[in-house]
Image (tube, rainbow over all chains, first blue to last red; front, top):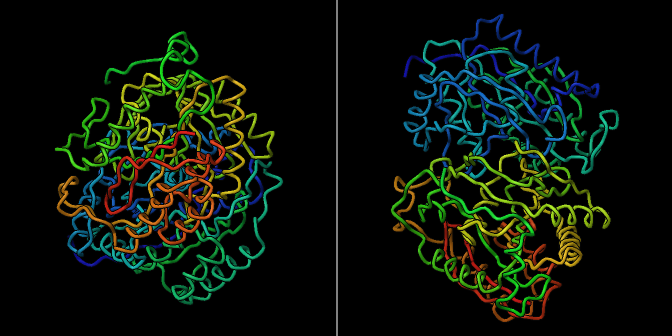
Length: 268
Length: 313
């Protein structure tokens, strides 16, 4: 483990594959463009590796760190397979030395790291979607443990930043806001928030982030009221990295099949 | 790739089975609560699964051995399984791929479950279930994409019930949302169960149903160095254990009608995996028969409660 690092930036980006649709809804286009903008900003800041958590790689035992240096294949989504965006080619480079150092740092923090390197491992749709939009950054990826306390994810992020040493990194969480879906097949034009109350809560959280307020005290209430994606553990991860502090910039917000999605940027 | 026996759905072998056990009648002849922890497959060391173990969780696996004997006596044409880890966010999906094959590396337990699967689907019955479900007002989809990885809850229950894989299969998804702790709408599972029963009747199949659910579902968020270390295997706490025993008391006393209230109460008390709806689907498909269930085994896996149970209507 190297000296204390400061991430160049942090970002929250959506993981729904609709952002890659050939025939997108306007909100899907806006969210995809904003995610590409995040990628441009990261490149402009000379970021070498992304420390990435996707809530679609959800786990329940320890904290899995992807250690396979090269992941390629086609992700066929088990729900969206009937659409063009349900079949996603991917070819990902993993910063394996950083991943291994991250796993060591997680263990050193008193948590349980699980080093993951298996042929045929199913990379999740969120990671594949975000990577396609952000551009070809080397990744260091960790799973989202749904049974661990969110404070554990904060410690995991902190361990990742520490493990990066002198490497210039940014921290990205691939996750949504409200997760209430429209429970039927729709056309892109029909997309809207599944529940106005979810929309209200999403905006409340985004306004708080933009104001630089601490939203951690709201997390549990947000999770209950808006069925927040993975109880909004994504924010715990981003905040734990130290990079998601101060005023955030909300680059895009809108529905994806009824769920709430946003692209949020924090300057490091 | 392991050797796998292949059966073609509806072939002459299935008709020949009718000569044995239970009078050879068509319909749903039995239903099993068939929990799917990958640990049970791992512990068995089948040739299809890459990781090797030194055993573990024997009592549950002995229960499955008894299930296999009883299943053989029922001589079904088809196994129909509802599993909570094929999570579909929009509607109920039914696997209509004639021959599903591939490797299922489980993202949560990749060190325990890397299973080479290769099985036949009873497509006619699968399509009939989709049609009946849609007619009943459910959002239902026929999944025909060979690229969709078969999940460990489907494979686990099917392997543990029938490791020879010599009976055609129909697998149903769990309409749920993976990104928050949602519950399936149990009333929809009633509808899906009734649709399944009508499809079985319409196609003349002799079917056994599998509900791939654990019971109490709180568990450790860490694993011992040796996954099959039975020295640390125990219920999450006494409350979870007691909730399971309360449910199983109702199961053993019968009739299943009492479970209409007991299952939701158990879900509330124990965060039970039956919230995914598999057990409600099974009992509804069987028409909530006026019988008691036969508990073949109970045990914990990383602290979750698991029971192997048979109902014969």
